[in-house]
Image: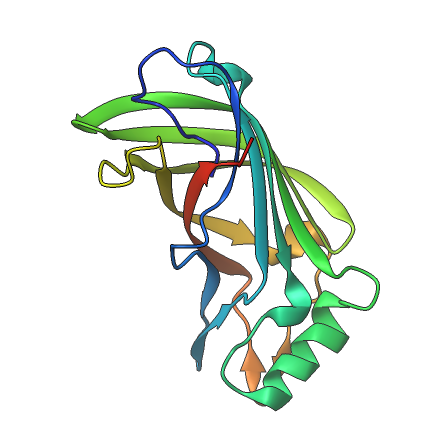
Length: 187
């Protein structure tokens, strides 16, 4: 997510935000014994400060409104929000990025990275490292960056009761899929 500007030439630190031109998404995928399903957030915000001269100092925040999580079945959505995520008390999942590290250069304009930070879900904060790929969007011409990642998250680490209801058998570990495009914020 704010892992951006990895391949940019010398520029000053800038603020970045989600690009309105991209299909930004944060999803989870659960593979349980009897049932597999996914959920997609409809409301995501992201803000980053990036200094390409000191990428370790990258800071940022991604906020996902869990009240907008959609699994494709209204009753399952309601049950998950009310009985497990307790979205009345904990409406958002927040990932605060503390730093990032370039692991390797995959190709021109594309880098493998590790993003380090803390995730807060359900009122519990845990350290999280997400590996992913950052690509400079050459067509945009303004330093726009796309971050893609898949990483596991153990819901029980966040004090979320594991649902095992008739229509909601959620695995203890879910896969988080992130695809965010960030553009320089207007000055």
